[in-house]
Image: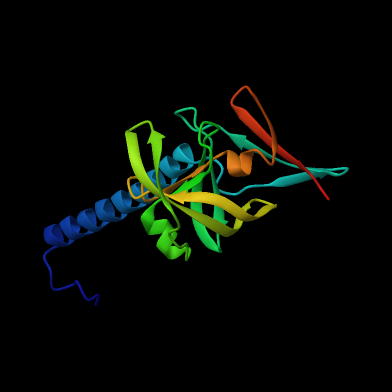
Length: 175
């Protein structure tokens, strides 16, 4: 006899129905969370291609037309948002602490949200796919989104890039 044999059949049916819906809702939640994450950042797994002496990465624009990509700062996983209007890489206070960045000289930066106080810093190692950059000038911006890093021209200026039909191609000559 099953462990639920002592429960009336209509109650047993109701329990099975509840369990079915809970499992279905949990599976749907996981599926749609993953789908939403891919829509926000379609470049979660970067693939580099080498042609001759040039390495390139192709990034897909997200649903808002922004280019996001996963990478690392001092071996800490981060999500970059590429910003050609940013002079340097800019990180939040939370990411700076995780990555072991130290505050340097204070300064002011003009952002879309207005003028904010920032601190200079240097990123020992920044990785984006197969691209590695060392001693990258950056700023720590406590007013930033704690989950994103603005990838500014202190890195993008070291790359060639072109955009066409929602695809941004980043390339670098291999030394």
